[in-house]
Figure 1: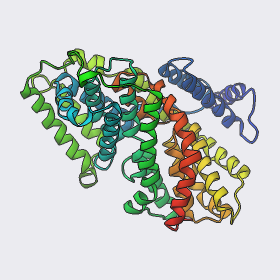
Figure 2: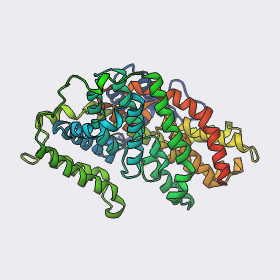
Figure 3: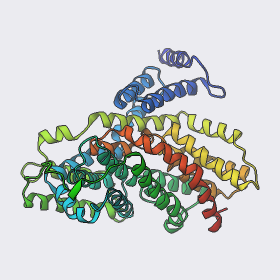
Figure 4: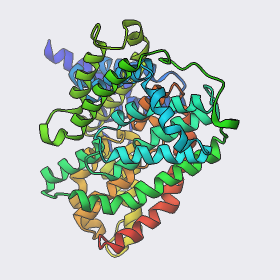
Length: 458
């Protein structure tokens, strides 16, 4: 009976892989087909993202490509529960009026012009990257404030100004922090895998100095410039809308102080996670519980039902499962080895080697999603170092250039979460992410090469 089940699974997999991919085993060909279909659906928006995830779940399980434990592991991940808690915290900030109150305090500093507001919000997001280890957590704090500022400046829902603020905060809470070692998940996966597999350790300062000037500061400046260009707007005369009656405007000062105190404790615990060892997701979950408790909390049951987007959770769980399937099936390593064979790596051709390794990381992120890049490429580092003649540390560090170059929102779930918190469509991000990726490859990559040379990494 067990043999029949196994044979049936093999027949289903071979039936799915009607067009076998050269160099891939039958099982890997089927995985590749399902992964490619899912990526196309997410990228084109042919169906809603959560439906694409459900299609991915169904095909993976029906054709026996992975066990249910792996397919649904995303629902047990810290990332999903951090998103749930993030929605609750965001709802509390809005419902209590705290976001509006903070926006009122920040408005005199940022309301001079649209460019000043975008630049100020980007700087705030970058600064928070040094304090808070979670990009979702950073978005939870800043996005409600940004949306309250948008209300104050007369930017209605769907306007260029409101979308511009949402995009700047989504990208600002995520992209610059790829250059700060403990601030994003892919950074920590790279650091942990490099130490475990190759006994290579990265120092906080070395990592920051190598990556932050170009991938942090210059890339953030490009984001603001692109938003100003592609989502132009201006603050209404006088800088004040005719009272948009923001949510939570009638909440008492006592309620706002209560939410501020809970949020302050949460921030302190998030900032000191290296000391107490509690995962930021579980800290956020505890905060959500407090904010939902009767009499103590401020988020009513009706608000909870409307604030948590189950469709977004399905999308995030699908993205996590897709990356896990690519790695578990060996497809990621197979694709990495295939790229390794075609890339023009050769000792002494440092510019071409640097470019090739960076592009290898970018392409891997399109298939395995950004968190999957270090898991796929780190084991290949010794071979890549031999082929290129570069040091293994240098080869490993080129991954950062690749996984910080995001083309589509599905690659980095926190980007989608931030846009959802802002109430704007994640598709707006593509108008910035695609030209930003092109500018990264054409402008920032050569600058990065010169910077690495200056610091002796090449």
